[in-house]
Length: 149
Image (cartoon, rainbow, N blue to C red; front, side, top):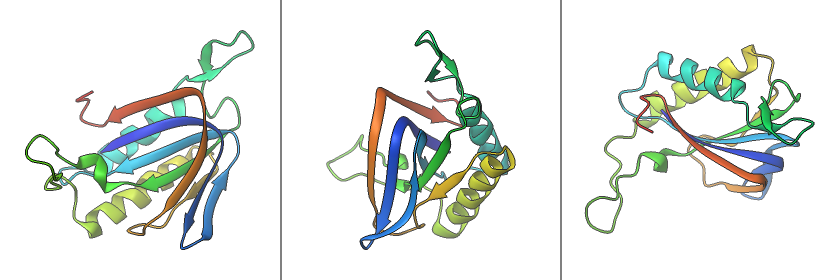
């Protein structure tokens, strides 16, 4: 499972010009599910993200987590995080999970965030979405449950 995590002061996601989720201060998580991923991967990434100390404290040092600051998380499914661009000019997606599996693990990931007391908003699985955000810092991190990076 892979995630792009961005610190934000506000974010929103729309499907066909309809707002499906919006947050204030918090994190935007673009989440990709791989074909080898399991519930263990969803739990690992959810716990990692909730506890990442990337919010500034009173001295402007990255010492606080989304939980510490009472922030929210906007989760957007993004199978293209498993796009392989090493050959040719068109990405291959053979490492991405099939839709049924990806949808279940996407939901499991969101459920783990909620269990940790974090307000969660989201896009619509398998839809074309428009994501708007104000990236604070800017802070953007790449995470992989297999710890490839």
